[in-house]
Length: 93
Image 1 (cartoon, rainbow, N blue to C red):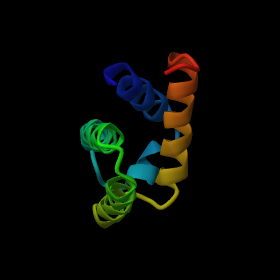
Image 2 (image 1 turned 30 degrees about the horizontal axis):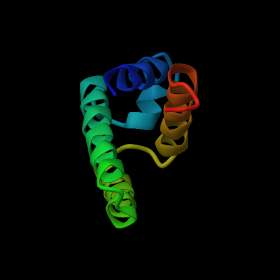
Image 3 (image 1 turned 90 degrees about the vertical axis):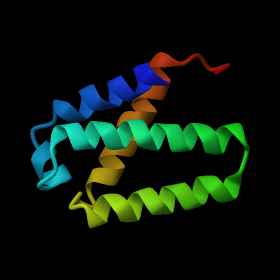
């Protein structure tokens, strides 16, 4: 999980529009959020709870937005997560 978080952090940190995406937040806050979000997702997959998964996504979306992240942040971050998974995990995983 840690190397996936790092891949997402690196991907987003290299963007020219990063500050527009994360608002007045620090890059450290973005990275901390990625780590926390990954932990929530891991737990929802581990317990195989669709409700927990859905509620976590909704909570993350609202929380990030309330802390000044742009709505455009979410598709960019999701694309980075998908890329990290596709580039670092085998199809079996």
